Image 1: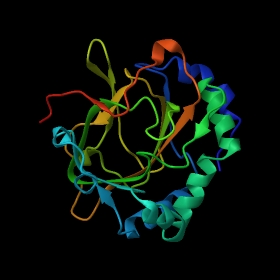
Image 2 (image 1 turned 90 degrees about the horizontal axis):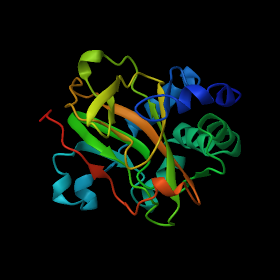
Image 3 (image 1 turned 90 degrees about the vertical axis):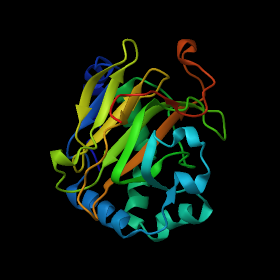
Length: 244
């Protein structure tokens, strides 16, 4: 689906990007596959939300109008039966071939795909939605593996800059925005995850009625990680910006 030889050639670019190792790919997969993934997600109805999951009310201003799947066993099955192209695309991103590409790109060996999709899978943000700047959980909630890499693939066609929804990458100390990326159709962002890898889309989404910011989010793990990167965080660490 992608040219897997790119990984080793772009390793230096990835590792030296600021504010932390990351890379952006436009036209990441074949356009027709990306477009069918969008159609699958647009037609899907059984989305979960933070309210349904009973998340702590302190998250109320940090994560607004975010919908996701899978969120239970039925929605896990739905990805195969109701979003078949999404399911096959996720299978590819979890395949040994793609894991090899990620390892060559990031320099992180023995990456493990998260078949449970804990916090990952398909994401949908509706009008007025936002995701405050945060770092991700450090250890997997079910198996204790260390979270190392995020892959985000944006899937809404014909994205307009005035809709907002930019992915922002922030430096940890000092706490300042370093980069802002539009969630353009078929754009992928891959980055290291640590307690200081801050990111989010904190500005309110201003899409037209009936449109959404769709993405696939997948996370990759290892059995161990460098000691200086270890912490016990098993949930996101939220930071406050001045956008609200």
